[in-house]
Image 1 (tube, rainbow, N blue to C red):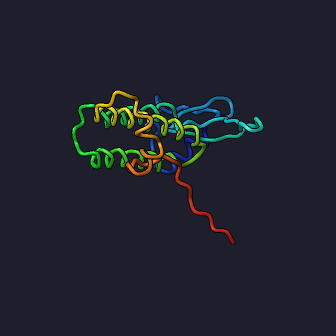
Image 2: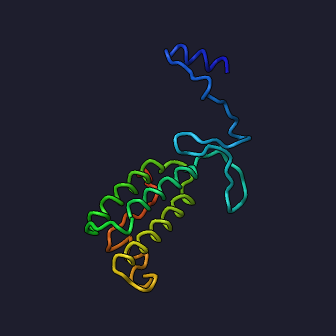
Image 3: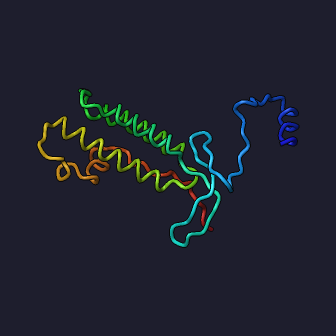
Length: 158
C-alpha cells in the first residue's frame, strides 16, 4: 500500500481514501468499470484462473436499455428502431469484448431476441408468441438486428 501511495504522489494524483479499497482478487471478486475481476473456473476441467467478465450490473443495465428502446408505444419505422438498438448493442459488445464474455453475451442475445420478438408481435397484433414468424435466424438475419458477440482481434498466422 505504501508503494502505491508513493507512485500516486510521483504522478501528481490524489487518492480518495473513502472510495479506494485494495482487494485480493484471488480471494474475492470485485467490480470495476463494468467488469467483475476475480477467480473463474473452466467448465470442461474445473481448473481455476484469474480473469474478467462483464458484471451483472452492466448486463442488467443493458437489458433495461433494450427494454426502453423496444417499448410497445414506439411507433417509429422498424429501420429507425433497429438502427438505435444496433448502436446500443454494438457499443456494448465493443466495450465488453475483453475477458470471459461468452456467458454474458449469450444472456444478452437471449434477452434481445425475446424483447425484439415480443415487440414485433405487439406491433403486428399477433395472437401467437411469434416464434414461427420471427425465429432468431430472421431477427438477427434479414431483420437486421445486431447479434451481440465479442469482437476478437485479428490474429496473423505465419
